[in-house]
Image (cartoon, rainbow, N blue to C red):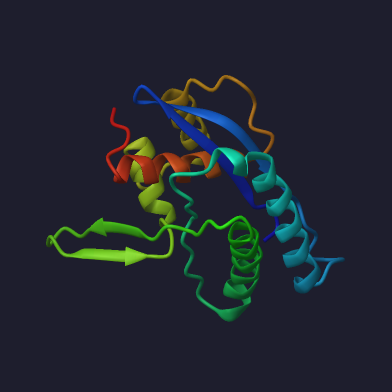
Length: 169
């Protein structure tokens, strides 16, 4: 909730390209959870409005499982704001389905951090700088990521596309 990011990735001839990215910073010291969730919803609404006419094949997010309500509540509030923004345009978040080692399928609301890192970098415990470099390698993006949350957002999109078989190395 402190600094969520978003990325739009378009696949052209099998090559993923970053179309746009954004982030917002909220302040846990001076802003209530309610205000921060509203700010995130407004930011997400404006960002989606900018691109909604073209449509989206997939809308995904990072999964999160904190160890306490203190960790979970801010993330769920941000999710709620984003969910409302997405639904205003008739879209919905896609579930993330993956296969466990035993062959069983599992579905989650988003992609876990280690799964994103594993799919995009090949290492489940990759550092932020490795994730950013992998995003550059996959997409050819040569600009700066203003914050880690921008490269993380792009990595989440890439991981989803890899998992769905839309892109491959």
